[in-house]
Length: 47
Image (cartoon, rainbow, N blue to C red; front, side, top):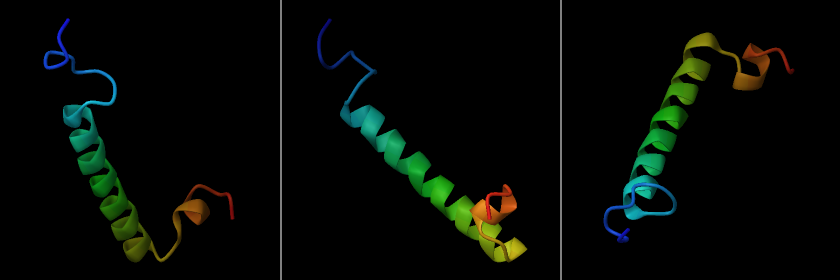
């Protein structure tokens, strides 16, 4: 199997989507914190 056809592992395709999803998760977490006034750890009961 050639390197260009692989969609698993540390490929540029996987790293691009990993970065995009991480940015979305960060923005959602920040928006949730701003709307509720509680941090993420407080929301799930750890603090």
